[in-house]
Image (tube, rainbow, N blue to C red):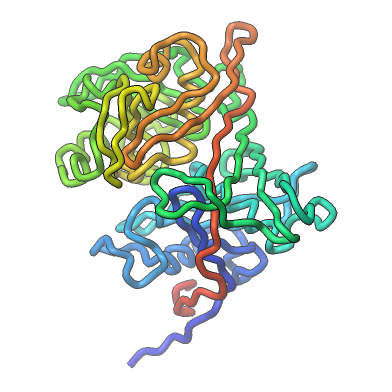
Length: 396
């Protein structure tokens, strides 16, 4: 019988927003995994339980969904005027790869809490009571994020009465500011990679659609629900149980990624599942959320459904919410038009689990749209802390 001893790695399992992930301090990882590359990826795959042909991640910490197949590596920041460097890895479920191409906005809510509790924020910056402002450098996208974390008696406050649709229990509110969330292009116009707020997307053997391509929070392709045969009120089962529909979305996403300049060939999309996201929007309609909560037409400005890692998300990715808020603030985008058009600094949108409000400040400078920041509220909580174990030979 073969034998490989298990190694123990300090880790914390946290919920952030509507996601869960395994958090590590960089210097707690085995030395070979402290650098980007094959060993680090193999470690994270084994921790999460991927690749799993059964799609369940039974032999790991993953929860068999894109929202729960996530990893975070944190260290004291190397950037001036920042507290912590935040690196996010989206672990594929049934494939042997970790996607480092984007951020997780939901888990961002837990980064500040972890950083405070694990000595990554200078003690003089942490109030005994009140709000601790944690300055986060998001390594994947090279952007600054500010987390406002509540403190009570010198400890991070995790419990409270803030309710977030998609999360069962109330918790303490953590406000997140995504500063300058749009991509920085040499021509100043990379927020819209084609230079247009609406484009025509031709997908062979599927159709031609209007699309808004935007790089804000995370690269996202927005479509009109009606153009692709949906109402915008769909819940997960309506799409995730339809293999043909999922394949269609993935094909549309691949062609959109190429038109955005994120890939050179359609085949590259298979190894870039985390970005871009694909979402569809519609004008407000009444529907019943996945929890049974009735959402009325007047409760929202628009409806949005988004796919993550090939499946319809149960709520809304935090980074996609940034894209929604940004696009809603810019007249003429499909998101803005679905919300009624015109200038706006915030929208409340309906998603499968309920509603979410996100704000964004957009200005036009030298003929180009720029967004100074996007703001939303999330919550976070430590679920378990200690060590994860993986077979030693996982790193070979």
